[in-house]
Image (cartoon, rainbow, N blue to C red; front, side):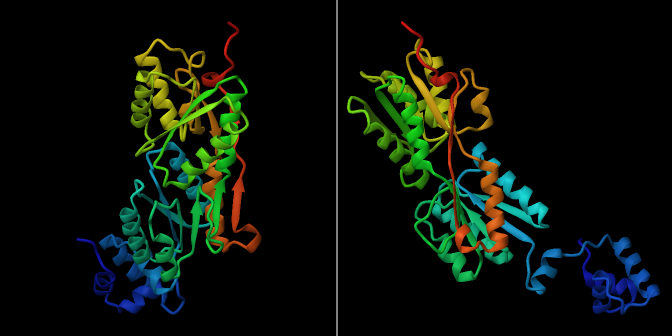
Length: 332
């Protein structure tokens, strides 16, 4: 059974208030009494409840980060950046993964409100009410990974429209003309923006054709299944753009394992996020790089510093990293 502050007071023969004074290093307690209290603490193995003390003081050293899928290495890197910056500032970070589920997101927000966290950084699940719930509780919020039309909601993101555009433009510059975009659901703002960028690049090439395959999830398995279907189609694409690297890696696996087609000679691939696995794939994957760890760090900065007007919406520019999966076709 866990010892309480009352147990410590009883064993030391003092009041609960005296134990509290010792725990808070107040000088009002004589050295001999303080020593008796510390001996009781050691004997009972009592651990002070820091969270409760913070609540009584009306402050918290805890932040929260809510992501769409913590198993995605991109969001794991965002969490790493958030934790690094929070630790530097004397805070800890609670992490929740919604799996794109608005109800699950709401449950996390309820828990974090009860914890009285100092702020929440979140990648919003489609259809959720998290921002309104946090505002009602007076808890600062920052959106991570997507731009926002809400001028009162600070955000840190990447220009995903530009990211989709550079990915498609890279493929089109090599003469690829039948592109397929795989990703979804399209209720996710980042996916919509990446697709919008691909479409913008396509408009510059009237002879090019784009097929969109909307998926229910953004996993390796989903990417492999989508690519398997494309391989069985009457007209296969000569390039595939994955809305994230997991989808593109799944597509790569399907092409190399289920067909005699070669990457990139027959089908070129480009992913998005530039996770560590992209560079080490059997055919190293070209990808649009996002500064994931920096997104997490800057989100915490915004929460702790109550972002100024000029810093409320920070947008990073993406970078296309070209590897073997979309290298130029060899001369025939």
